[in-house]
Amino acid sequence: MPDAEPGSDRAAGRYAGAVDAALDRLADVGFEFGPDFAMHAPMAAEALVALDYPDVVPSWIELNLQRRRSYAPPPPMEPIPDGDPLARRAALGDYRRVTDWVAYFDRRLAERPWRDVVVEWWPVLLDGAFAAFTHGLIRTAHAVRMLRTAPEPSPLQLAELARGLAYWAARFTPVRGPGAGAGEIPVTLATRVPVERVGAALSELTVVNAGLYAEFAPRPPVPAVHTVTAPAAVRLVLPILPDELWPPTYAAAEALAAQVWAVSRGFSGQGAPLPEGDPPAVDALVEDAVEIGEEHAIKLAEACRREFALRPDPRYLAAAQTLNVNCRHGGGL
Image (cartoon, rainbow, N blue to C red; front, side):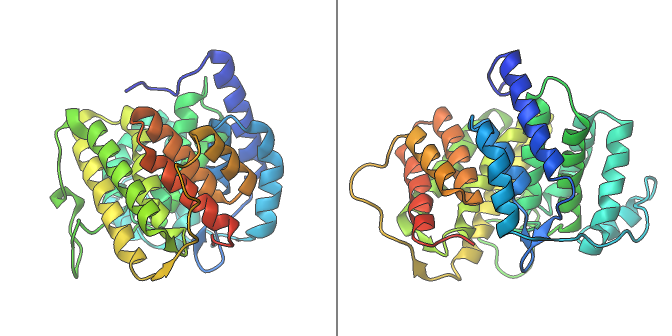
């Protein structure tokens, strides 16, 4: 798997400039809005740039910030210590410490290469990857793609990685294995595949979940999309991880999808019916999602386009179409 998104140095420079402009505008935005919903603006803005819609990003951000008024994060409590693993472990899952976690990861990223920090913390955070309904992982993955794609890491990109990791740590929520009942099952007990099969297994996982999403079209339509977007986000990080972390990372992706479906089964409504016939082409679906402007529609379209490029299967197109249609019928958050 390549270590950067395809494209010329000039394209990478344009990407980095557009991403940095978005991050600069979002620097003071909090992590959450409403009843503990994750702020999606940094993730969706990066997805828009990756979809080659950088000119849309500034106006999209302004509209999104009007719709989603973020809460200010809690004030600092006490520094997360560098040399006390037990104290760090105790601070996991405590959202009151999110600002302390930001300062901790800012410090770590100033001291060490960003890849080393991600590799160090990835197995620690992986067991808590249901954090904020998978958004700690997803936000971190988008930040990793920024840093992999840009010619040089920028301070804004490093700060976004720190915020993604910090949010994940502060909302750390253990993952249950597939089919788990009461209690938590470590992701290491979920399905394990050999490292050489992880890429194909991820494709199978995302395409099956895309097909299920299109078939059931649950309402509200947003929660179940994370059965696709969370495993697809994992793929963005794999290139910087050592081989030994690939199988447990796939296991976590599979467990996350199962856990999202388990929660989504609590919603019994059926979404708007799809038009008859085959779904539109991928570029048309992306254009429709961008026009709709709903953050999950943008992120799902980007994930489905990326996964479709690896495995051209119409179930990805049907999933993106399902969310687009339901957003146009008043779905979403």
